[in-house]
Image 1 (cartoon, helix red, strand yellow):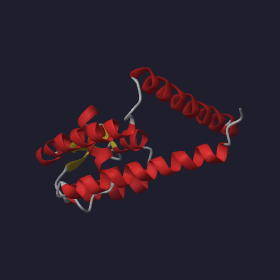
Image 2 (tube, helix red, strand yellow):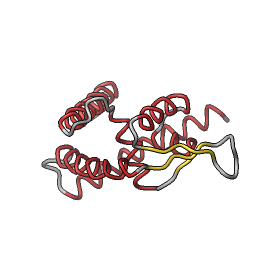
Image 3 (spheres, helix red, strand yellow):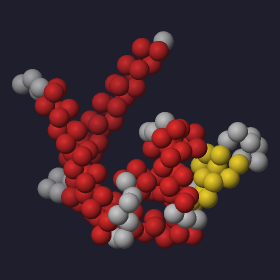
Image 4 (cartoon, one colour):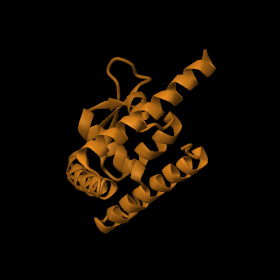
Length: 151
């Protein structure tokens, strides 16, 4: 049985869109109507890893630095993050959560649990594990293809 790649890609795209809509609606219900899911993901990464440079954060959220700068500026203007110069390299910017940002991580944790419960509803633990392994393999395939193209 051969799987239609375009069907798989279409489903992945729809799932991405559905999950973004899911989170956007819940963020608005929590009083954050102007937040995109990428804002929440940035705050989640900072909560997980602590202080990060713009480069590290861009890598972790899979955004280029110019896009990330706009997102971080909004989070800073709203009081969720603090931006400072690196003491070791003044060209590098360091991003940390503020007290307000830390409070928001409780909301992101709750939303993350809701999203996971919806995403994996009806899946056994083994099915969830295999699903994630398959996605990791696809990710590695694309990473290897990109290295080959550059090389």
